[in-house]
Amino acid sequence: MNCSECLVDFLIKNNVTDVFGYAGGYIVPFMDALYKRKNEIRTHVCYNEQGCALAAVGYARTSGKIGVYFTTSGPGAVNGLSGLADAWFDGFPVLGICGNVPTNEMRGFSGIRQNGFQEMDLVSITRNITKYSVTANTSKGFPEIVSRAYNIANLGRKGGVVIDFPLDIQQANIIDR
Image (cartoon, rainbow, N blue to C red; front, top):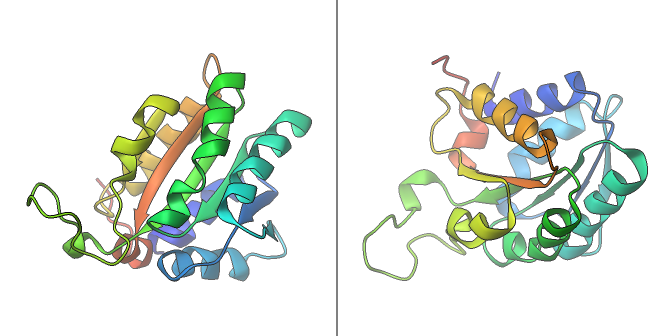
């Protein structure tokens, strides 16, 4: 099982029936995993990434369940900030799943603006409007990252969480601990 399939399986096992998203090159493996389970979880395609995140918030408000959305990397991921801020201020559980460049293209602390196409340090950008924001930079322990994000979104005063999901990790097989 790869990390994308693991994430979809986790969502289904936790009674997530609807996700909101917008297609992009750096989230395709996750979208493929959703498609394989289309009879168990519905994907609602939105016109833009901001709409996806806000739809997830609206879903959380009206259903009492966690709202889940996905976007691609860079500007696509940043377009979800309005929804994350809404979830933060109003206390609704939202999980943002944002694609990113492969880990070998991430710049780290190299001093350059970006290395990969539309690479974005989403964790730094979302730190002040989420309860938890993490880059899944290895498949080792990935199920624990997903579980932690989900639980934190729903714990105490609810709010948004983000999993920054690099392309190679989406495709990587799960490695236990």
